Length: 147
Image (cartoon, rainbow, N blue to C red; front, side):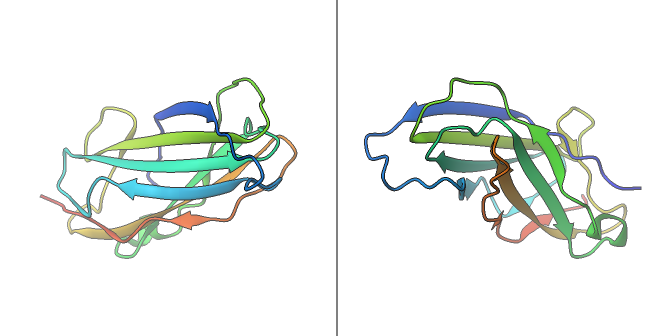
């Protein structure tokens, strides 16, 4: 059974002064992860920054979990989440905070392997209203302990 990934997204929008560095195709950057080894009951937090020249990042954030250990989790396809509706402004820079409760039933949650530790990484990409898709960014390898 595939693990369902849920998302809690906190979006902070602000306009920067230098708009010429933004492109029509959204740009996504992984700013950080709150750790590398996670025991059950911990929270995984990913911070991402997206930019877009036209400011139409109102479509979709995609997340894919790739497990290196558990065959039932190994082929997770990308899960999409609609982005909140916020004012469209040229030269948009947006921050996303994506959090998961590991080994906990409280959403948004993810499970690990049933009887062993897991090694996994996460991929993220974003699509805007004009169907422009960013490059895919990838987290470092994360260890999900089964204790």
